[in-house]
Amino acid sequence: MADDSYITEDAEAREALVNNVLQIQQQLRGVIARVDSAKKEHESLLTENQMLQKYINNSLTSTAVFGATGGAISQSAAAAAAMMNKSRMSGEQHQA
Image (cartoon, rainbow, N blue to C red):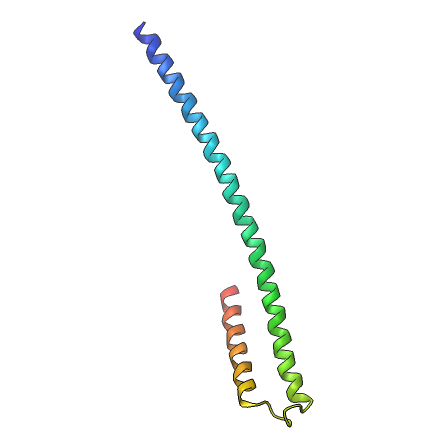
């Protein structure tokens, strides 16, 4: 009889352990799905930021080329362009 109670307790412990493992696996699948979703969103936002950065740089360049500022970029626009270039450079270094 004593052996039967150990076997029953052992089986119950194994069943509880298996159920716990299955529950944790399901939670892990959920976390992986959220990580994948966050990666896709990050890539999308990164692409969008790069496109906007090119647009801003092109706008600043075309303003100077077409003489809208008298043929020279104003100091504030030059400072903005320098900051954008610096930001772009640091972003490219992080990607590498």
